[in-house]
Length: 380
Picture 1 (tube, one colour):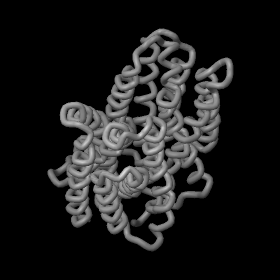
Picture 2: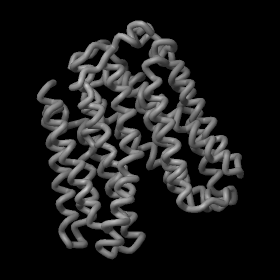
Picture 3: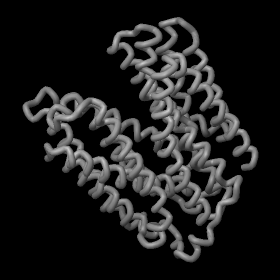
Picture 4: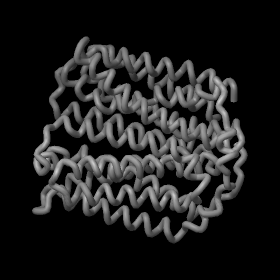
């Protein structure tokens, strides 16, 4: 794909740091939730409501991005978003009232959604396929790092608050680096006026890509329910089942780094379709009543790894900048909507039908991705 501008090594590293920072808050509540909920005196399922609130706010901020980019330079959008995340983390760390948990979820949702779309928009226009995959791998680095920090903090007197404070310090360091390089982002985009943005219309076929990203919400379906499947269907212990889920997230992270290398020799189209097929094969392994296969299936489901970053590059390969910006915005919005809706539907079905409904649901969604992906990439 033709790039509109050369990107220096330092700016590439800054983008990687931003994506590490994007991943840092995402495991804060998950890793230390048992301790956090005791401080706030809420039930275990409250984390599900907070996740939904955060995702809805992320959805809103991604839809607002095209309008914001018409009024603000990218560096201002990034800094404003990082301040939102920082406010959310501070509310979480200092609070004891439930309403502060909600404030934290709202602030981090708006902040992370805007950062995600801003960096994706910037990188999709300028990065190679390999760099785009590595960029998304950096998100996994951030999630893994914060999970480790939160687990380590629990052995100290301050407990989970020390972990959040550590994440805040890391976020401030990343903000300082972004601030020092903001001039490079400030002049990076051609201004888009409100009149120009309102004339950008999406045709019917243009909605296929956002639809694909809605179905990509299957990533969160797997992450949330594969450990329950291991316990309920194959009688794994809770600890071993958690390791299966960890293998899935590890597969995503490792896969994105490996994709960053293989894009030198393989086309994006071949990589995307191959990874969807590998994910379908891994899903098929879940139907086999063999306990030893599930860890391999969990890691293999990480075959989703190449799909998210590489499909994000399609709009700038197909459309002008204004239309591509809007499509990228809708891609992320639909993905976040899928990550709200699909896990809820899966949970209801799982409860009503049983554990074996999970591989069936995953296979249906992966099949939909294969069909949509084939049509989208044939048009490209």
